[in-house]
Length: 320
Image 1 (cartoon, rainbow, N blue to C red):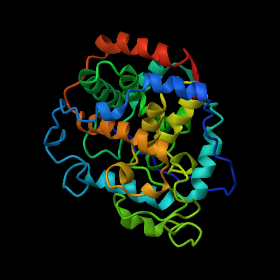
Image 2 (cartoon, one colour):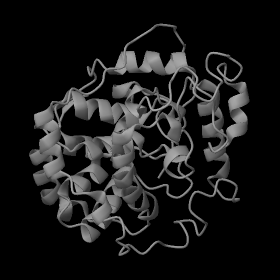
Image 3 (cartoon, rainbow, N blue to C red):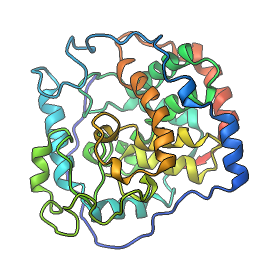
């Protein structure tokens, strides 16, 4: 498949916005707990066989291994680490919270991912719809009763449509790759950390301390993350009234936050709800990462099942 490269810059404008928190009533929280099984009861499942190598015969998430994607991936992270500033993220959130780019259903959005290849991924270069279905089908096999988790896997990367012209045609560094907080020091566990030295926030005393503009235990919902498909899809789901449980929304929003869920960085910013939802994210992550394969899923065969889940947890049409 031919890959088109995008170049260009995005101007950074300084402005202040409020980060809106989800409005959860006691009744809503009660309903979510009924839908969402206690992760501790399922965390010991080991049915999924983790492969030793990725689609290129290399170790998973090996960013130093020589190969055809090494330079593409490293250049991606260089641009991301230089350009993802606190002010940039605020501007992107302000722009995209309008949800004025399109009106369409979830499956329609899935099909758009036939046009998307993730330049930050060292493990796969297939169109993203296959990654969505591979991860969803792997989870469905091991956790057949957790249908919300199957759907979460299907939609977790739908925000990658941001690379398409209709949705802003953002450069891939502003859409994909590992995410990290802005407004506080960049932890050493971030992939290709060296490039943060060229980020304007690196030497800003307001942003370069351990907690920066945040306080310990403030909750990740109050932390600005680097802008990309994770935060965008979370925003789309929330504003369109999804009935996914809170763990589903958490997975969508933080599944690329590898410094946290793989390396334990930034944990001082988490609150108790974050810690509970993290149990589910750790379950999900195995399937997100290790289900990537050159063995493709028959889209038409599984489509009716996922359409039924979409109808259960989402409206027919969403604003994007």
